[in-house]
Image (cartoon, rainbow, N blue to C red; front, side, top):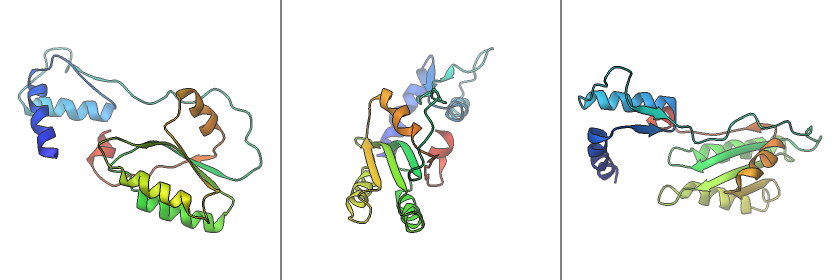
Length: 168
């Protein structure tokens, strides 16, 4: 599958007038790929632009968090480089120390990609000993994101080592 994706990308890189990426690191990697293909940009730089796909932070001021449980948030697409095994193991250990802690996940599986991470999180959320603390919100409307994340005390993400998390 990866070879097919790469072979489909090569003609695009060879003929595109302009390209966009989702991060500055990915923009720089794309410029490097263009150079490897012999496409040296004219004066003014490569026609590659970074268009971030995330929300602007910080959100507007939220009311103070109550004195309730510590809430940990994770937000985004559960992609192939998410280390969901380590995430679940770490949160299990944290719940042993702080059983009142809550985990809130916004986002979810990406169609046609790795859905095993979401399935594992769903199975964990259904376990009787954690079902009250694990909140899988799934994909939510953008206006709800500040409301959910604003009540959390910390954010977490567990990437596996590799080029994808490094480059965006």
